[in-house]
Image 1 (cartoon, rainbow, N blue to C red):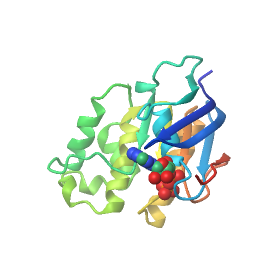
Image 2: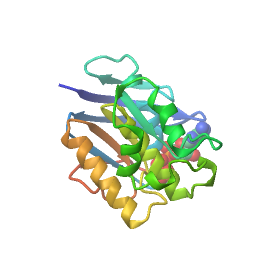
Image 3: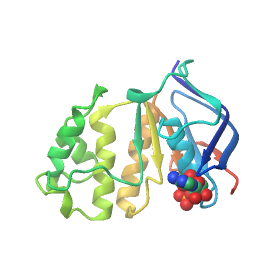
Image 4: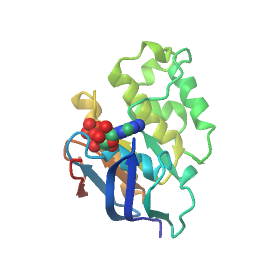
Length: 198
Ligand SMILES: Nc1ncnc2c1ncn2[C@@H]1O[C@H](COP(=O)(O)OP(=O)(O)OP(=O)(O)O)[C@@H](O)[C@H]1O
């Protein structure tokens, strides 16, 4: 069974304790909402699970091992990591070559996020919400079981928010796991971990 176990996690940033004593479990087919005030440490927790910031205490086990989770996770951060001069579809083709099980063909992923009509537009011309939609398509072209999503609905209109809900529901229904930093309720049933303000 695919499983993420976080125990007694502690992280410092800039020499200050941001997270201490954090623990939770997430199994295949489950989502967890990370909530808390600005600065509470939601992004820090996602980055720690992604291996992007070092732990000062505790452990993170993925399938019983504390080795880096690396190719089993998608990290969806505030930056959309698009190459501005490349067309939308070419950005996804490039992304589809990174490690992970092959997912949806690029054009199908763009259809899922309602951007197939912009496949040949340079990414530089996309609006903020369109960039987020392409970032969702990235989750689909490479299959990875653990999604770490940092405020995924920022800049989304109602239709994109509904699309996000569908993608998240499908991911979890197919045995995926999702850890989502959010200021809003998740569109699917999920437990909540509220981080305290530091
Ligand atoms: N690189 C850094 N160096 C020093 N301090 C940092 C760094 N990154 C974040 N912090 C601090 O860590 C704390 C937690 O930040 P974090 O971004 O994890 O909060 P958050 O809960 O995601 O906030 P928000 O809801 O505003 O996105 C904040 O006090 C922030 O100033």
